[in-house]
Image 1: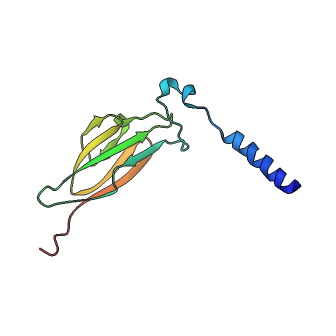
Image 2: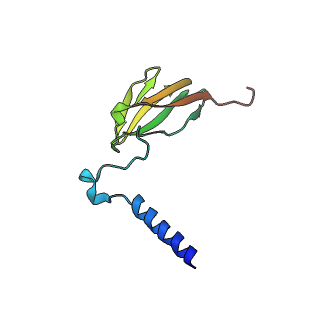
Image 3: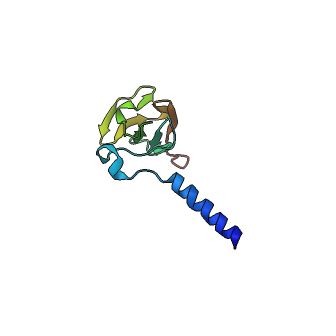
Amino acid sequence: MKHILRILLLALTLLGACTKGGQSEMPGGSALEVDDPEGKLMVSAGRIEVSPERPMATLYATYINSKGLYDPGAITVEPYVPSVTDGNHAVFTLGVGTYTVRAGKLSLSVTVTLKNRGGI
């Protein structure tokens, strides 16, 4: 029983140490806490298949910077593709190929391929 109480006390101590501030402590309620000091970069898909009739894909990318704020203006694609900002996202129209999406020190690879038409 003594051993169980020690484990419970340790768990409660660790839980208290891991508790972070709530929404009311964030500036304007618009910041997010980010565990990674570089931030977080996300894309709608890492591999996209497009039809030969419309060989273009729409990619949505989201970047939460090291301060926990959305920063769509920091997102770029190489080779260069212009973007349009849509709320917290940067939107890119990509043709067939391989691209590198970058924001801050983070990068992701995205590949756009043609759908296999069953040997036709």
